[in-house]
Length: 318
Image 1: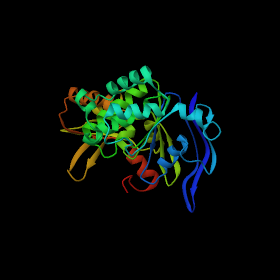
Image 2: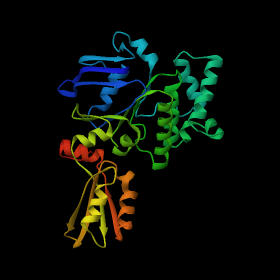
Image 3: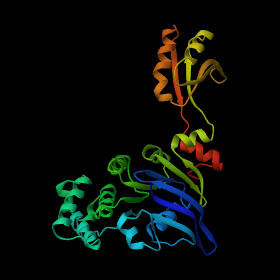
Image 4: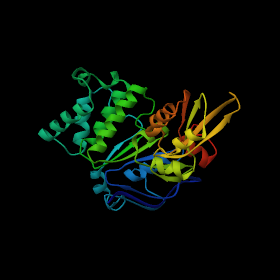
């Protein structure tokens, strides 16, 4: 079952084609990533899903409701976390959540209970809850921003660049919150321009560039699509045909061969595999048991950055 269905959607702003004939589905309970550089069309697409913008052409359904024909039903199902913080600086976290809760039609005991649940969820301490939001760090504000979007218990959550500008500690804290939401069965669409974030969090990814989806699939499917290979490179003190054959026999090894490192003037062993982390210890153990000393080991993993460069001819940061 799909919680989001997008069919042939285009969005044009005068002479600018921001989203160009996109079709895709997001399954119920899926953490779906929209990955691409700034200006790729990610935010425009999420604004159309949320009903803030209407498509120039095409249709979007959320929970089987058309975003234009059944907008109120869609709003009940959606929780939207915009890239910009939408909190009142002169209110504290509790007061902000109370304000947004009333906008969602919540009140009384139910609102109070929901606010208390979400304050625990955001991991804010009791002192921070009572301080004005203006005193919060960027990470604290992001957490309250997410809590505000969850007040009405939406099934589908749109997160637009939620960790932009955060330090690594706050970024990983938000990752834990996002993963917790997925474990609750929420359907999440996450827009990001960070490869690491997409690979860490998302089970399925659409890579966008210049308003189009240029690749769609799980991180591993996208890597396989461009036919680049993960490689383990060992520098041994000696090699032999017997050692190469033993390494080839290890489960998960696609190929193994010797190669000359022209820079170091040494002979190396190249091991091709889909799962370098899973088989590394077996490769090293087999080498050592063969009476060969391992001088160094290097992993070369194919990443979503490699996928993007291969598909577009440039890096994501460009």
